[in-house]
Image (cartoon, rainbow, N blue to C red; front, side):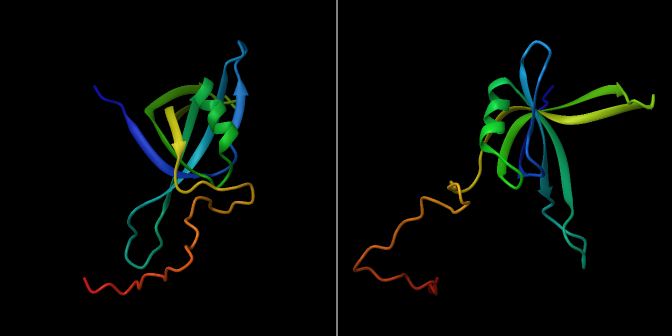
Length: 132
């Protein structure tokens, strides 16, 4: 059997970092992923994927990602059953994250993209109207 999922999206809010009673860190976060299609005359819908990362991966997510950040995650889908405070039985489905990573250009503290090549003196810009 194979249970593997990969998602690339934006964080819906800042990751929530918690610890178990034994001191193991974990992070809960939600990815907003826009669908690749839209019904005719309508806007694309967004799927909201709940995720959970443990230990070093949780620390990494908590340190480097904030609401709106692009993130890629790889893991497996899991479900857990629980009883809510009102006594109703509920099921939670989430991505159990094994790896998380950066997506896109690196940004500085002000949110500006870094790493773009600076213009070189003596060279002119390339014409974007390429004939092929």
